[in-house]
Length: 387
Image (cartoon, rainbow, N blue to C red; front, side, top):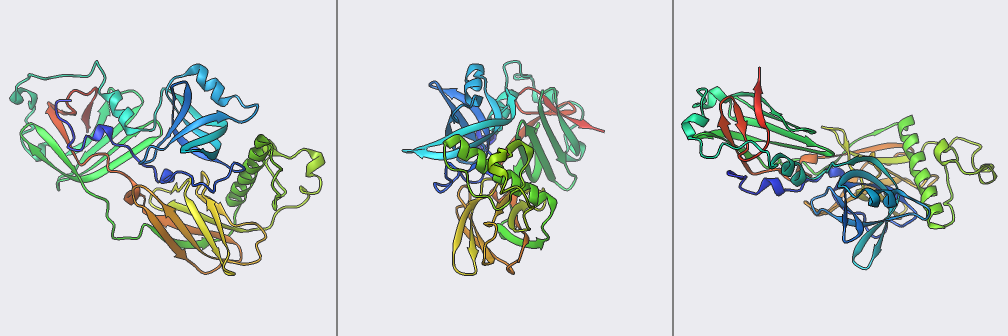
């Protein structure tokens, strides 16, 4: 590209907070969880590269009798997917034993580098060698003339917007596959270019914080059932004894055979205690986030949040949950403990500041002024201002 972001933004990797950390070693094979990333075949192996800052990589294998990985191997195209699997370690390798692929999208990727490689394709618009005064036609010689709302045009399956405000601030967003990326900051004009300078997210508020305790509801009950269903399916796939379930009422898709279910499927479970971690600004859940529940009697329970940001205290626990410790790695490593009034039952809602855990897509981005459009040099498509 003729003009590049000063931090090589087209190779940046984004974290969707939901994926801030790979699953720790205590996530046993008996529990299935959701892993969102990009599938590829490397040296004959099926690999999942997750959409976290570390771009964590996993070797994928089918559960006994499963076909999801085998079917993908026959296709072989890069694809994005939500992988339901059980985590384990083999030496220094992360391994997922896969039950199924959800939201499978061939040809897609959740990584920003792939999105921008798609923009910079061989048939990209090129105006190299055009004099600056011709490229800046249309009277765009002052910042005031450039103020407005721009949309990325002529790029399939990629959406991007840019808002240039009259006070010198900008808002930028890009959506590609499972990737959503945003930036804010200040903009100015240098000769025939609009220069975007992204601001660092504010660190004035805490990364995690207590919001409220809500009553147990149907959504939470359904989430608990889905979790139990995945526990049963994982145990069956691994040839292990089925876990003892406190909640006997399961969805039809994972109902235990009648001979086994007779004594366990006769009553509806009573409300329990759930922790839900999410970004209140966007309602995005914190998936695959390691947490430790602390009980009033001094015991602890290590868990990992599910695809909707829930972690469930053991049903029927005789002592109350008094606090939760959240464990994060990249880009902010550390532990943070949140205390709250111990609930008898209900949903403890923990918020987090998603912006602090997101990598900025760029520090500085230069867009060439081309008539009424703004163009990334050498890239396909252009930002067109809308009325």
